[in-house]
Image (tube, one colour):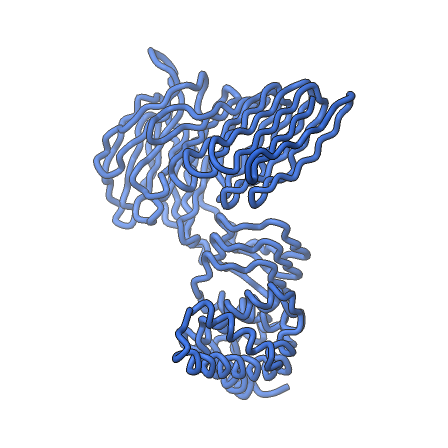
Amino acid sequence: MKSEKFQVEDLFSIFALSKKVDEIVYPILIKISQREKIQDCLEILSQVQNQKHFEQVIFQVENSSQSSNYSLLNFVKNNILTITDILKKIMDHEFNEQNYSLDELQEIIQDLITKISWDKRIIEFLKFLVRLTALDERFIYCGSNSVHLLVQMQVDLKEQSFENIRIRNTSLLGANLMRCDLSGSEFNNVIISGMNLNQAKLFNCKWRNLKINELNNLNGHSESVNQVAFSSDGKSLVSCSNDNSICLWDIRRAKVQCLNRKKNQVQSVCFSPNYAILVYCIGCFIYIWNYKREKQISKLHSKTDFVKSICFSPDGATLASAGIRLCGVGGNYIHLWNVKTGQQQAELGGHSQCIMSVCFSPDGNTIASGSQDYSIYLWDVKTGQQKANLGGHSNFINQLSFSPDVMISLFDYGMLRQDNNSNNQKVIIKVNSQFVFLLMVLHQHLVIMISLSVYGMLRQDYNKQNQMVILIQLIQSVSLLMVLHQHLVVWISLSVYGMLRQDNKKPNQMVIAVI
């Protein structure tokens, strides 16, 4: 095996070649390779004809004039030749053969990080190697080592498109993949301890032999912990307990800072989105703190006798609180507060029992509340009006959470209405339905499965272009499988004699009636 110093110099000399490559070329190459379903990247890059194809695509993107096309042609050609040369070198290198996350190779990794010294073009090339694993299996090892190197460098990997990547035999300890698209990814024998996957897309993933080593056992509370919340950067954790304390944890180092012990049990705690404010509730009071200075900013007095849940809006300007009214006049309310002024903005009432959880939707336009009355309410933040009552659970609703694309499940009899007051408006009403699963709302295209256990009617009505109307009467089961790119895929099974009619009266209009 080569000496460590030689390995570092040799590998860095290969990475340094990427300084000649403009980062705009990488996504174009990936896009073309995906479209052409190319599995041999070196072969496609080495063919002049395909190089010209790449160059023509770039010309179209840039919309260059004929006079400038010649210089752009040379620019792209030189970039492709350089990338080809780098990939040939790295394919035969130990970086594409060994697991560089092993403890005995960490000195090499640290020396390599020092040499790279946050060079932007090298970092973009490493990201390219990671994405290349989705196309060419020969680069899975170097792509896996590349993502490990990026994590060790603490490169910002949030909101990256890593669809279908294949990562094996490495460590992503503490990786921050917040809001990344990891759909279709394949992980095998990967350490994912401390990984932040908050709001990441994880559809159709194949993750096997994952290692989730317990980073730290956070001991600090003497009684039951009521709630925990991560900071937006994923590095800190705050917890509150029945021992009347609030603890702030450095996750990686397992260090704890206990804020001043309170007089009563702390029921709920959360960070503001910008990680500047800490809010907690005791009894009917809500405390807003600058926790770094351990200084109280304000103290809010809620009409609720016992506050059970608090939550910031995505912009951090509004705080929602909810709980239970033990005695006196009034019901169980959600209160909306202006964080800056400390004034109450709105009061939302409707639940008959204690409200256990409140949360904002990612766009901040909707609040969901879950109660001991077994129901979930959706509220319009601007109007304060109830948008939906999602009933059907057989016990208390203890916790609610929105996913980036909104996932809601309904059980027993109920009705769900989703209404977007804009183009591509979608309204869905289900009557007498026993099971309803809203699977995904993505890019304004609806993927939904509906089953009816009794005679019923489904009506989907778009009062604009691309109107779609589906009427189902006297049928036993109906499953709407997919609405994608304004085309309807539908599966209908009948238990009685019936007739299927599809009538297109306008462009893209679809009418399906089952009688």
